[in-house]
Image 1 (tube, rainbow, N blue to C red):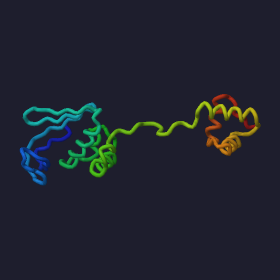
Image 2: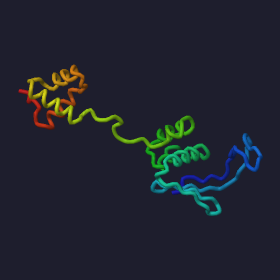
Image 3: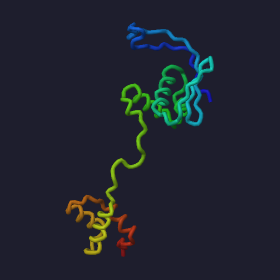
Image 4: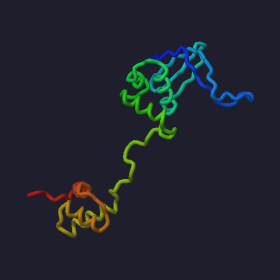
Length: 172
């Protein structure tokens, strides 16, 4: 699927070429570029047939490329986001904000799932079960008693542990 055709743009160069300072100089560069996104792979092809390909693992480059295309061509943002594997127009604008205002580290993929270690350890389970056998408290009272002892657990966690071990008190 061809995402966009860019025919020309202005690029600003900065740096030193052969001891000549180009910083702040605007150079007009004309080019024709086909952009294809297919199965997570991004391919740029110029009129001479030279290609640059980015795999789906190169997420930072793909995000920057998507925003570059969005700024330089008039494609609908939702269509552009969908071609790059994002679901919504809001995804485009969230990434745009990060590209234009954030740091490169903000563009790295985030680890899915919980970001803190589980409070349900074997020691906590043992403490809950021991408290259940030593007392006749319900889950709320067990959670409160353990919290007072310095072990912060919720009533829900106590209930899950008791249910998993078949020790949940049945309501009568």
